[in-house]
Length: 108
Image 1 (spheres, helix red, strand yellow):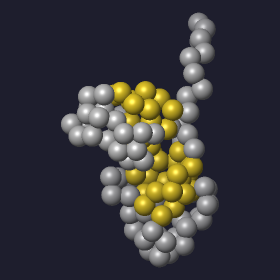
Image 2 (cartoon, helix red, strand yellow; image 1 turned 60 degrees about the vertical axis):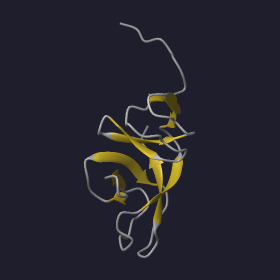
Image 3 (cartoon, helix red, strand yellow; image 1 turned 30 degrees about the vertical axis):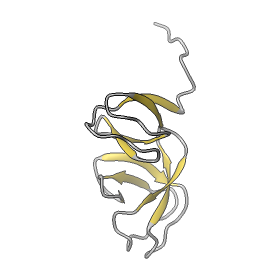
Image 4 (spheres, helix red, strand yellow; image 1 turned 90 degrees about the horizontal axis):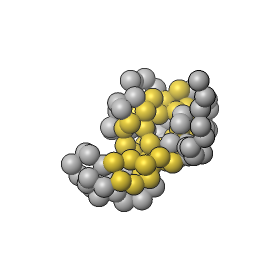
């Protein structure tokens, strides 16, 4: 069996079937297991690019969380957390208690 190269895979085509418009920078869930970040506005029922690699500043679910660089991070529609079921990636930098965001390296 062989594989044929298709694309770099840094951004993927995403059909917006959420029932609402997606704005550039919005976090979208892929198959309830991973996240991506919209690269531009995506109207409902239209196709647009979502980033699946890169580092993005994202809101922490709990500002009091202390997050060390490299720890796995998860998304639950209210923010980035230290535990959960939707894999976001890992911390690309430490985030102290009281900081509202954390830099997340997407897992791709």
